[in-house]
View 1 (tube, helix red, strand yellow):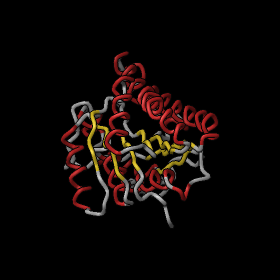
View 2 (cartoon, one colour):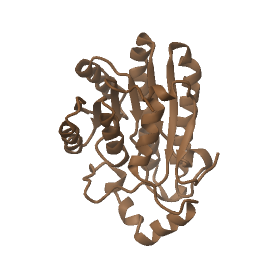
View 3 (cartoon, helix red, strand yellow):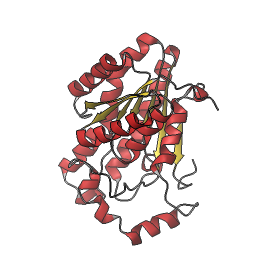
View 4 (cartoon, one colour):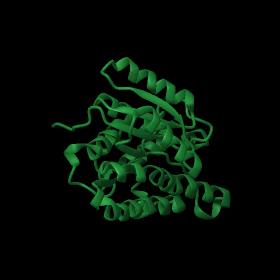
Length: 265
């Protein structure tokens, strides 16, 4: 299948770790140039080095990215355009939650979940949309969650935010389709990063999530999936790359779960 991605310019927020890293590398393997929007510059530079080692013509650049700040997302997109010449694809990958019951979470945690998971997508899309409309082309893929499709125990506000990302993307697909823009969503199952990856202090995996998902817990998670196994970051990345590609040129406003059949909606 010809994906038509060679030479395309991509922004991946949170592109230095776990699912974001896999997405970044998958685009680079297709011949894309990638701007890695990262709080953790060390992780971003490591991925950029892996892309340079591919030696296939792809390039990677690391840009400061705090998706909760409208001014900083504007600056991220402007810098990406300055370095790459244009932005063809935006991947909203950054996400954050703490796995606790709704009443056990502080207001600060609820606010951060909304700021990162919903406002983050809003800010990044708002920053790139004028550029894409002017060029009459562009694809946006946002990482949502099955929690946003069905609700999830101990993830109430996170679920609300991810449902918001789905509705936001569908609405924008209707608003901007006339300009040739496409918006789609990918909902991963649980993907635990390998211990070899160094997460920033702001990452949810650096704030107790790894300790929560013990081997016993992960075995129970596997049994909840009809395919009886955990998914991988690469499997999520494949779906993101496809939905961003020319092969998916007539697909917009759609939500694709890559979660081993956990939801079948």
